[in-house]
Length: 195
Image (cartoon, rainbow, N blue to C red; front, top):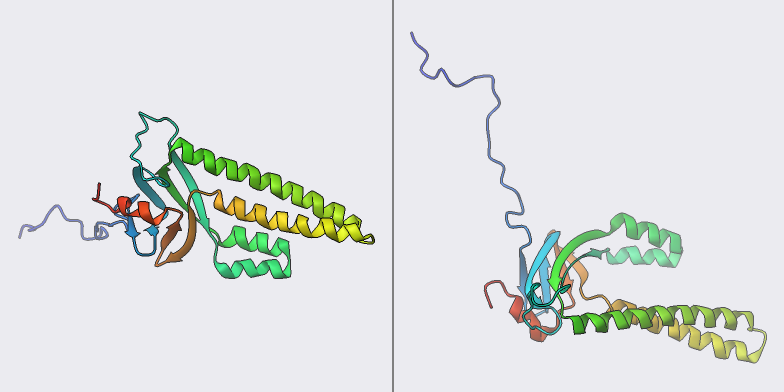
């Protein structure tokens, strides 16, 4: 009696088609009411300035397309600062999750962010210097007069440095990153299909 299926090997493992979880890399969704983007570990935004909403093209304005990694660290990891700064650094590097975002930003808006970053670092170093001088003069009355403004300068510089980031990951829900930093008046232009 001849074999009905001579091409099939009965000892071969079954073949299956694997469908990737992320079928559309670079895809994202927009939550207009909360002013946030939701995406997986790789997000590609259209060529629209994320701060002003102006359409940009890499051909007309060079160096406007940027790819950056934003990191999300769970909020409970920041409690490590209360114990020890080294514990916080360890927790941050162990539990942070990266998300790569490709976006466009106008040169004028980028200059504003760079200016904030420069003033933030200058304020940080100036504040550390003032705190050091004030701490060395604590026995004298002018020590506190230098120490307290130095501490305020450090806090102000951290606010500037935080605001100098174009985008930031503020949460993670169902394996999706929640990305903030785009103004509410502009975020409606990033809805897929709305151009």
